[in-house]
Image (cartoon, rainbow, N blue to C red):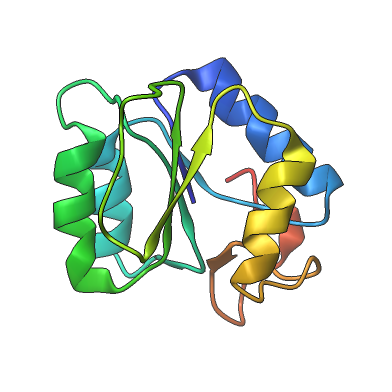
Length: 128
């Protein structure tokens, strides 16, 4: 799941990931992402913009801990760090190849979705 408030950046990242063989659900706010999680969406990994309006990425991380989902923080803020070894950081702007390398560390195969929609869904429904 991509959590990014900049719609153009989120959609561009989703397209680039699709071309790399992954696909992802986009949430344009932390609140939207948490609502998806509360409604049983279980992503393989969360790509999180740390500077979100209303609910910051730092608060999102705290809220997401209960779901035990790996988090990759996307930020241009060179001062932002974490002591949590479970959280990876990728600095914006980044190359899609660098993100794919990090995703490979989580053993997510390129043919798998970054979200688990269950057996009744397929790739053709990703835009819904």
